Figure 1: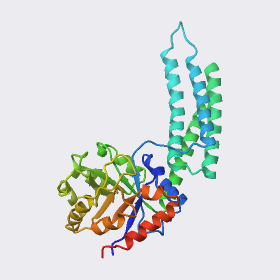
Figure 2 (figure 1 turned 90 degrees about the horizontal axis):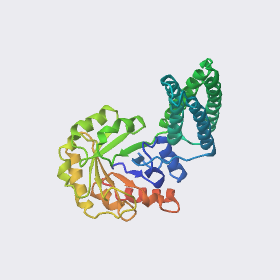
Figure 3 (figure 1 turned 180 degrees about the vertical axis):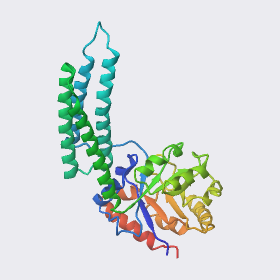
Figure 4 (figure 1 turned 60 degrees about the vertical axis):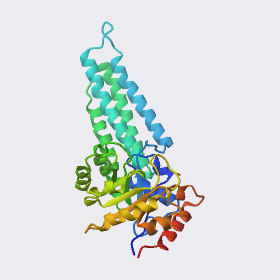
Length: 341
């Protein structure tokens, strides 16, 4: 019996770019879904969109400290000579400003991707803020008497080292937790972004035939990044458009709604397209999965599974319910009850 793999895409995941494995598993756990035991292989679909991180009081305080440090950096430009800023003075400002911005950007990206409000994260953030306060004090003193900046440079390096350690520890810890990050790039020119998603923790990357003119090159590039390569098409695109790309893909994804937003109704014609995609998959000697995305719920999950799909993406059918964990388990049960033997 084929493994039934149900991919969860909810509102928590839909607005994030390069969403990390930790966030996916955290969202599932909060919804009452056991990523390790609920099914043979649980895929978490990561959709591209705007980053929407949880803002805690500590992060807001961190931003305030950065603003204060930048204000002190700005004082370097306060002294003018006949109304003009000297080139050396501007260069001095840039050399102070850029490391401050680098610390803020690195910590903010970390918070967006890994923020679990853990004790380690809070302590690391407080330590970085302390180093920033020291840097700010050194900048203020240096703007007046131009004394040695050795301590400020050491604090810069210390703050960046802490951020780097936070990244390394979190990525390793959350990768060991298991789960499977299946990234579906509903964007133009996806080949320009696949390396970033692979670096962010993607296990599988799927691109559209409509937006990727060099599929052969792109699918091989995804493989070279150590990820499973998938290819998909929109509801109005003929399945024949996948025929050649199916030679190089690990996943054939059939969109059963038009890309754009969640909660859309299932397009019935998908049930005629899935068997054709299953034929393309079975023509390969290597295992190729057939995935379906859009409108999958209690009334459609058995039909799409019977039609040939064995990776089933559900979003609204899970996260729009009062108890997402129960909704997930119901879908798994319905799909397993109509398994393709």
